[in-house]
Image 1: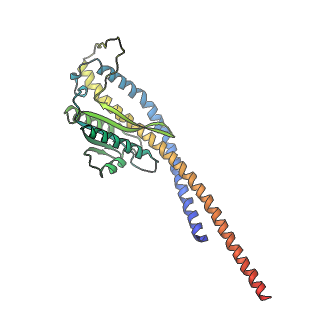
Image 2: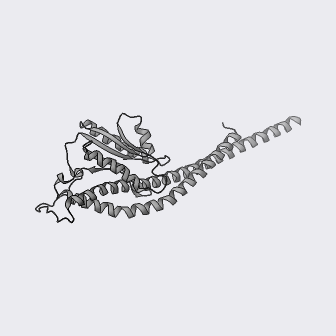
Image 3: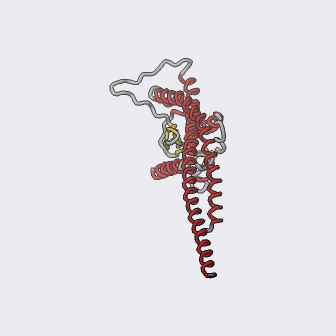
Length: 288
């Protein structure tokens, strides 16, 4: 049985841990509000731009721009967005598990998958695995996310697709639902899938001003950068929500453990006092 000193030391240790987890929960909650506001503000433009690009893809000739080209799939690029830190429950594990499923599925289909990693956890995980890697970007989620990160990653992806270095592009990230829920999303970015045309109707083209080529040259890279930026914002908000939930659970578990240890300490102390009293009484009886 543990001594009173050991139990007291363990109670002190758990109390210190509870202070840390409680502070981390408060910090995550304060950052989550701003991250939630950012993603709510970014979603409408990103979704509308996606609708416009899908509509254009159904109307224009795919040969008018390299990003609209649809080729036989041989090489697949997978962008995986994870966090830079842990202590956020199953946030990173869920993303990596879904990315592994996608990589296995593409490999079994005879394709050659390559990785584009954003986040330290994904980088460290795939360094121990055989998949080739193109880009590794870390330190993105320390504070406000810079749009230049999405531009940097998007520029590289656009050049590679235009040069036929890969034929299909997937984006794997955690979508923010609320502070308690996140959803792993596997999204195809390239080639852009055309919007479905209702049965019985014919897709008509638009009159472009200044020209279709100029509009596509401006909109397509912007679509890529906006989608990447939105995914980064989604991932950041989802990570903060997961960390807040995980730290809340850890704080509650620490409080329960402190209560259990305190009860154990009191029982051990009571047993020690009873033993001492019995010894005193026994000694007094022996002296009579």
